Amino acid sequence: MTTLLDGLAEFLNQSVTVERYTGRDAYGKPTYAAPTTLKARVQGRARRIVTQSGEDVTSTLQVYFGTTETPPTVRDRITLPSPFAPTQPTILAVSISPDEEGALVCALYC
Image (cartoon, rainbow, N blue to C red; front, side, top):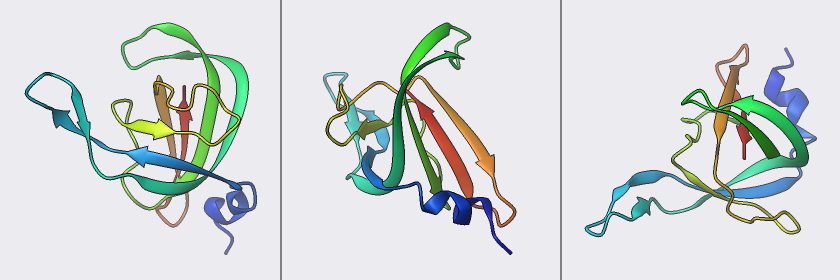
């Protein structure tokens, strides 16, 4: 049986680095776990979205990938490949869709 991730795999031809948020240091700055690299697809296009806090904003970058692990959150940090700018955009929202086998197809809106 072909899963959603199988169909997506051929389009994941870029690499994105994800650093999971772990908390704040003594000075109040965010701290992150060691970076991991994911195969992804980055698209630059304007898209209206609603953030977790209910704000209506415009996303200018979308990052699509598949995972069997816990997906990134809006508190995590990502680094995009060249030529995308900014290289470390703020994650505004996360969309998650499970496939038939339990893997997740994720979209990060930045």
